[in-house]
Image (cartoon, rainbow, N blue to C red):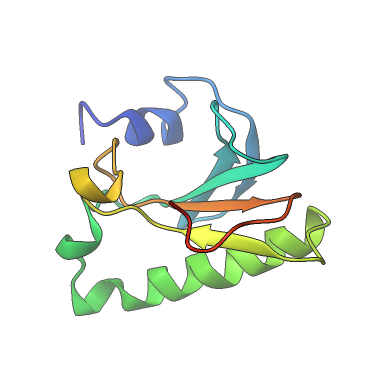
Length: 113
């Protein structure tokens, strides 16, 4: 998608601190971290929001979750972490490309607020 911030990051048009990349997933450090570890995991396929997922996207969503667990281990989050996806404006989504926040390195409160 031409004007999507995350698509531009994947394409290398905007620099990022890449943490992981494969043929389906791109992960990079968030520029405004809310915890000592804050990584964004995004599918390379542009999907605007969770509501736009199709049954064909199930495999990539599962792959992202498995990748998040792998990265959490590699990043030293053995005490725990949170994987969050915001959906639409009231859910806190500011970039309309499905993405997951992997956050950890400090105690998380529940409910989140």
